[in-house]
Image 1 (cartoon, rainbow, N blue to C red):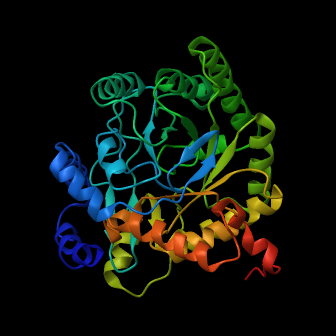
Image 2: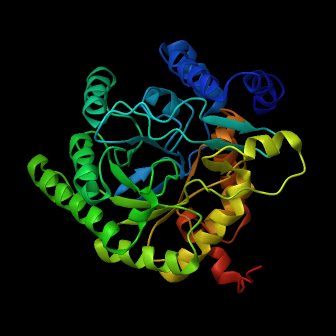
Length: 379
């Protein structure tokens, strides 16, 4: 199935505008899962083996999830569970509805397996998203896997008012989502990355934690995990500071990493044209940097702080490398564009095989194994 996608479907999608192709793929998945016959066929074709992990107080059928940005509007929730993903992250969602940046705003480099986007947090706003999730839950029930929400800042909101903006979205989505990710690292909202540092980040986390406590008491549920998502472009000093601030502020974990504003070197004229576009780059070129940052965060926290690894995962080898670096959960976005719906099965089944070939009995035991085998030499 993966070969068929690479030989037929991907070249066809490559002829289309990237954003339109993305929308058609989401719609196709939604339609395929609208009846039990095609839904069952999809699951039989693409569903992976079980590889259960327990994180953030919940059991995940496997550690491989959907990264934010792929299903911004939560349009294909049943589709992602049908494909066997271990968890789903929707959004980014902002307090205010946003159209996002002018089009075109998504670009694809097939040769480098890279995407560039400058979407600008286009989304229906958290009030509308809450209504949509309420309707979906009433019709289909809660998703069978944990549902995460990526929280962004509304473009019209001044940086000084960012804590209230993030907190508003979290409060509106609280009944429907299991984990919340504070996104202060998108390069496509002006000055957003300034919120990664010191008091700015601490104030956002504090505002969200206030909502967390209030809502958990009101609804009679446990407080929900709160994570922060960081950029791969942080210097080491900045990374140390962000990790320290986020932990002290009460974040339950970290997502490493978002897209990068850096560009790889290439002699390919077509790639040069794509890489000249403004926006955040994801996919294969960010893999090494993402993994290096996971290594560093694991070292800084003695492996005691959960790390979600995302960036350039295209196969089980990429995923296993991030597990070794210290990631306990994994996510992909660009990988689904270039490898298709078989990516989940390929990664999860491959991780199962890697685990059986290792000295570990569970995936939790394998997390951070690179740090225990031999000293890592930075290039």
